[in-house]
Length: 304
Image 1: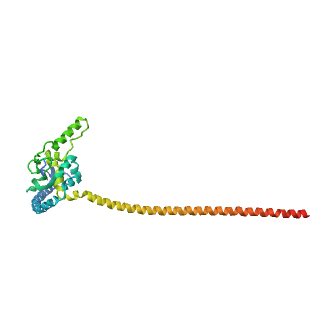
Image 2: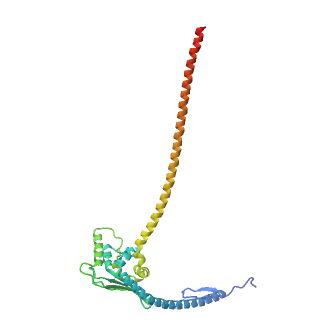
Image 3: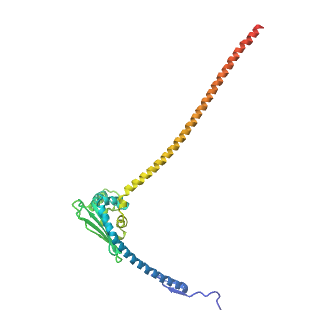
């Protein structure tokens, strides 16, 4: 007995990619998948080559940018409290600053971000301080190692706190006091120096990323934030003042029209009163005339 209809294509079991699961495909689909896989390998090879060339370009321009970063730091030294002002004006950095840390950062005179020669392997953030009442270090450094082998890790220079000035210890004491007072403490609040000494999860260090990718490339924008806001505020005030003036002019005109209408109404009322009074006068005169005529009639009667 012969079967009717097209004969189904032979199914073939194939593994594509690095997945553990295998599926059955017909010969045509199998061939297309193999070609796609080969094409994808070519794309991956080009992407890897592009990454290597991009790395070389980044290294080249890092060297070209370095003298300008150094010149900028020299100029920044001429402006008092530049870095602490920029930090306080930055929404994410200011969120982790407490009052005493802000006072300490008034002594921060220089900031540098250095990427390792192999950019993908990591970077370091250097904080330079003038002589201050908090610690003896001239510079403290936090490094991030992001090599392909192993998990990302960080390390930092130990801070040589002066007696009674350890801000990290003071923060812990505050937390202990809050717990003793039975106040609800949802989580340990992060501060600047607790961030600096924290090496728990280098891959999720958002503050380091903000300093490296946002603050360091252009700190001037954060130093000038209040001035920019003031300028924008003045422009908005001027616009609102102009709108208020226009509104007041319209209101005055409307009030003027209302007064004219009231004046016209008053004039009409006065005219009606005058007409009414004149009518009364004429009626009075008519009555007087009639009074004068009656005696004449009476005289005639008498004569008869």
